[in-house]
Image (cartoon, rainbow, N blue to C red):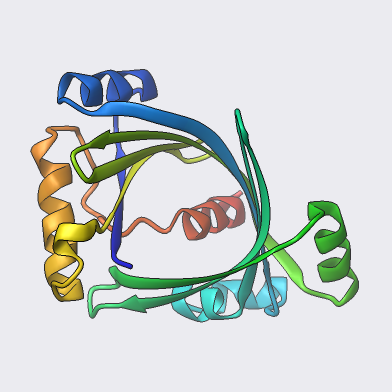
Length: 193
């Protein structure tokens, strides 16, 4: 799966309104509570790359919405291009019955919790394109777009470029990183304090 994630420098409500004005229909809202655990110790975190860190990370994810309550363990395997963009991601998920029990197990075996945040999600759709507006209190607002059926047979690089063209066509004031790594941004912000 290829996706982009870019930071939007605008108010959340303005972004949501602009999507409606651009012909996107609101689908649903939900929150992800993501808790990242790694085998790396706290003093090692500054010494490893994002890819190295994520390769040794398990996420406890709790997705809660109006008619939604999912709890999973998630492992992400990401392929990065030479510029550090995530051009492909494979997620492996296992359903769990309790976030607290999973945290207890990970804490007891000595895994290190390096990131814990809530991601507010607002999904919009136009044709086959689904745009996920995300807000993380500590970081700001982001837009994520995943590949869709009509581009699924393209190369990862081509898919990445098409998704960039879509976000650029919306006219939002955005950052220049189309592969924002929110947990890593959260970690760097936490370490800077």
